[in-house]
Image 1: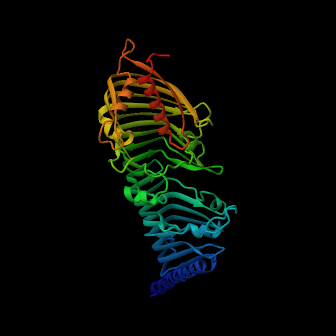
Image 2 (image 1 turned 180 degrees about the horizontal axis):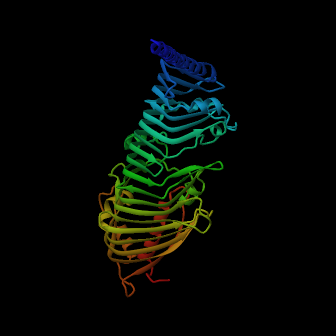
Length: 523
């Protein structure tokens, strides 16, 4: 009997203790849920509005879950909506209470955002451009998350123009390890510090302005590499429709890149300047089709050479090596209503671009080495270099053409120059040095039985008189040196309203005319 009496108080004490603990936990959970709800309702600034349908709190595991979330951000001055977020659920796991209560810090093991749909209206942000950055919110606590994850998100960036979507990206899956921010970090250009990360997404769309757009099928980006598949940069209109929208010349463009890789990407800010660095990059099997309607008025705006473009970029770039593998280029021009556009083709385009950078010291250089098959049979190479630090945009270019049957270019010559050519250029070599104003160089060429025919205006018949007169001044390939070469000089002035490749063509044209019509001797 005494043993039963002895055990009864112990059992009673334990039972009461368990009840107290259970009740205490229940009360604590209610208090925690109430405190969190109160914080979300009362502590958020007026420009942030939050609604949700359900909240779950487990103080034992440090878990907070909220479902069916609607979160809107408004401009603090105009109270115009600038960001809208709709989300199925958000869950915070492994919340550290001691850090929260004693060290004023939110520390959690994981934060998961499920199906966030974000619509951003940047044109509704009316904050003055010169105002000091204040961050999205003013944080009173430091925040550290072991793993931040986004599952199947979507982002739409809107614009005021008739094409309302400036950027759209779907099926965004993202994680970042060891993310942290605080009252000081939140005001910086990159308001968070982080460890390893990975982003995957698809169906990327970017509005590039009134005439072009960019589409990407899939995107992968992490701390080691970026990989893009199914990239297409193309005109919004077909060729005829684009011409109706233009007042000055503009290329109709269709660029397809099945696959592009960038390795070892690093980015951030050096003082106030954004930088991006990679180890190597590769584009595989690009296909570029360009068409220009020359019946539209010329665009007489000044065109910058590539060295100046890179020098004046608002960001710092540094890519030691970039390769283009097995590309294709098709270029055509419409110069008259009565003929089909003349076409030029470049197959098996392979290029290595070295030191694509605008941060190397004076004396360095960016170089491009390319080779291709021109018009189906001729081998062509280009070796081109420049120093971005040279404000006169000095450059050096050298190229070769071998085994070129000139009849292959006749469809282009007929359409564009009202001429036909015959004969073979066995070997052509040129070297040019120049700057943004003028250039000079030399050329040597070995060719056989070169002749050309001038056509009448309707391009249907040969203008015999002009053909005879013209060929009187053209050497068919005789009067060569012992190796069979004739020599010519190059002296060209750049048209600043044209591109670098037009400038290069002027040099090649001048050298070719000098070889064909001069004495052919080396100076």
